[in-house]
Length: 397
View 1 (cartoon, rainbow, N blue to C red):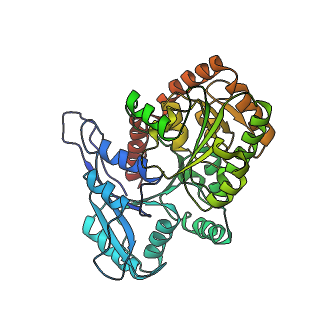
View 2 (cartoon, rainbow, N blue to C red):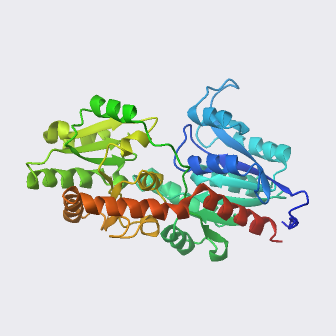
View 3 (tube, one colour):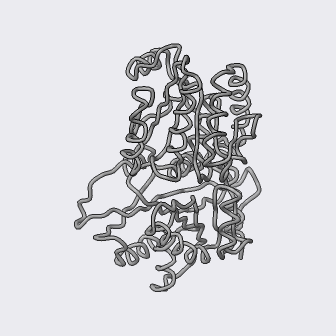
């Protein structure tokens, strides 16, 4: 597909019509940068200007489907969103609905996010022989190899990702893995995530938070934020914290774990002997204030891409201990803007936490360096990279 974009700043810019297909019913990590970009790229100095609409699937047996957090967020952001109704998992009737939606929108670019959306688009092109007068960009956000079903989805995705005009992923290790499994190397692009700045919580908000969760002023607070699933490494963190408490019995240590997921009950059982020193806070609609009651942010994952929680901890100027996996070493540097450890190494994780608990000056130094490094992951930088990808994609014959 080829589109000529004007370079004359005084002339009317071309507007790219982008239709982005997403899955899920909540505003997950992959969705947040997309909503941010949609707001930033509507006009102003965006070159080209982008008219971005969303499309998603909703499981329902009638046209009266219930609202969900994703639909609500799109409405609040004034982003148009269409719904494909499916009556069961992998409902093939979705293919005809998708073809009609694409014909209606006449997009220059169709984006797909994650396994299900990639597969639906590949099916629509192959078996329904949909006329392709648009460019297809597939966004890969990583895989969760938690069970056999998810590993099968990963194998399915490898088939789908051989077909788009461009494949975007969030870190270099993910790009290398995609290429190793068959994605054309000249079509794979790395674009890291980004976050929008938020105001610092007020003193009253932080006081209320400390009181609610019984955090004493002298407590050394370690915070972890993320889905409670095996690849996030919370078991390692809990065991490291247990050893840390044994080494520093005189210190008031607290571990706050924000998030929910299939591992919650098992993790709570594993931490039962630690009593109130470990608190599971469950899902929190607004995680941002929790960073400011923490002294250290811990990210013990076995696998990561470009984690938004890491960027949030950097923005909040927290000292960070993280595993050197995925895009984390591309985001922070060991002993400069974070302390990086080998994944699954409980001893090294404990040592890193202990060193920061006992060295407030080092915590401040690392936190300030992390906040400075965040400039590379600003909304403006993200918009610039995505618009560059769009220009390159639509200009390719």
